[in-house]
View 1: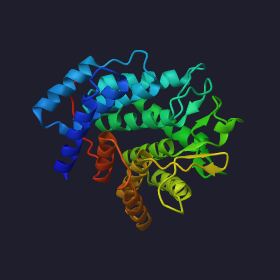
View 2: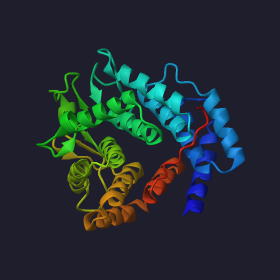
View 3: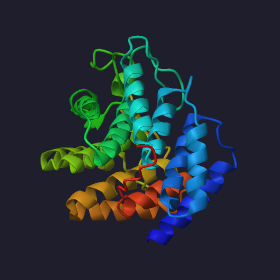
View 4: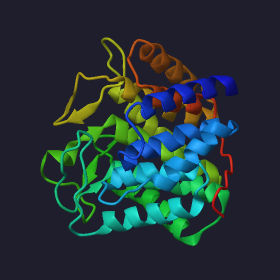
Length: 302
């Protein structure tokens, strides 16, 4: 299986390099994450060092900065990743913060966005696997609390993409809007953090929310996880990236619990995803999740 991951990682690196390095924090972060799965090959390690040293995030959107932090963390740049994730969280806390919708459009000023919490939590969990850090632990706890206490909408049985700055649902359409990619990323990150902390009750809760989302988002007519729920209607779009996000979440829950429901739905979504086009980076993420993502302690910068 390690050979399959290395082959997929090499394809992802080639595709990302085709766009050139140093073009954006997002692209560099994705490239570093892919390179972290080729660490035993010297030429790829040298490339990772070059990309990391040349990466910049000045002026980048918070989501792009967090993607870079994830890539840096995956390659062992612990201190740089820590600084970047905490800086990104501070930017999200600003009263005038303007996040981005999944389509890249500006959000209402001060809105709290689910994908930001998901990325913050994912990076913090990876860094905390390497060493304990009080500020990162607080950041991770804040992300978990926000996802559970404020973004979860009990009437919808799903995670809202955005809430107001005071954490209450907004009165505009965002107050009932659920995006599968963001919800699944948040639940996957929460499962990872629950596993790191050994909290079985949190795994059970995240598992319950995941089940609610997957069963509600599944298209009963033709199959596939639908992309957006807004104004009491599910969209017809079922892109490959959404299926990959669902596979990642289900594979993570199956790793933690190994139940029949997880196994059945993992196979069901995988069968549908086989016919969906996906980019090499997304395919790599999907494969890594299905084969239990390793938590290697790669230390470049002490």
